[in-house]
Length: 264
Image 1 (cartoon, helix red, strand yellow):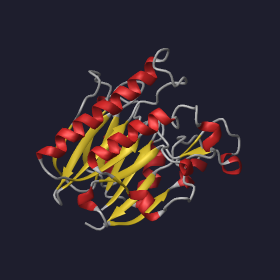
Image 2: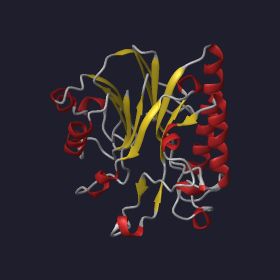
Image 3: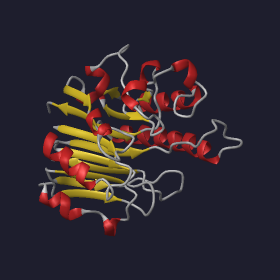
Image 4: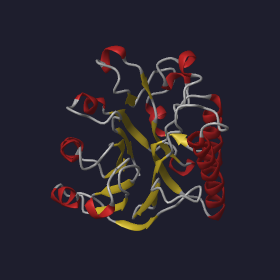
């Protein structure tokens, strides 16, 4: 089962890039974040033409939005709202092999890592807290074979950023965010599927700022996009990679696709 997570930063603007990627990589499941597209304008015809007949789309106008797009049929789908906001940041699809795929777009958190002056940062921490409580309760119902993917907007490790020292006070790598994400990870004993293939201390990034004129030369990246799995899937990861070629395309997303393959 080949699963991809990609913050596409406007699916309609970059549908040709998505199509090129799908033809090249042929994943079973593609999870997109930041659709910036209401459901009625989603480019369904393009995915039909590529053989991706099964789609669970949860979009909205201008920003946010998530979708799960697959070659293989769903057995069920689900949507979860957090923080009493219907801002399209989660969707789930289950498959015949018993695997749930959850697609998340965690709030970015604004610029200032201070909840007293930055409502966006407060929202991010509240979102993570609610995710933790939700999964704790969900896990108590029954064990789950689940893969959680998405733009988490947090680079948790020193080796997930170009400079740990310089980014400690920058939103996405502050200790308070990292601790909140770790509490969520512990709520499911989640395993970082990509780090199973690329263990630390290897540096690994999935996002590079548009501000860098030559992003490959400067390589000031962060690993904001993740693929996690529940313990029930431990030992099933066979391959993982960041498809950074996409970052070289004309008018690309600032995020590259993250790919993980599972032997299930």
